Length: 146
Image (cartoon, rainbow, N blue to C red):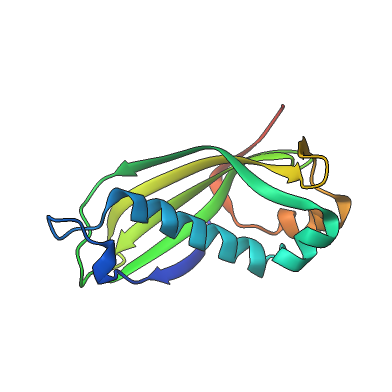
């Protein structure tokens, strides 16, 4: 499986009273890495604004496996797990790894593209299809029907 990876840093403000990472921080990290992947894949805010599209989420779920503490060394990976052939609907899976050997959490998001003028769901514009095809895919990647 090929994946996109980013290092994460635990900040003091990310901690709860038990001195491990608050649950909502995991979702913030997921959004950070997912948008970095999209930006690095050519889905920049400017390009999306020109095409009048933006990503939206239908579902965001985190499975917490191991706690994360302040001094942990972290990386998050993200891959495309499923997609419709037109790129209109998709699922991405993120994994948070501690010290490159301990899986701490898995975040799964189901998303789509929205036409920002019509405020309706849309397919991915043709000009973005090649970029979307280059997003790393899970070993179990599957094409799905709407």
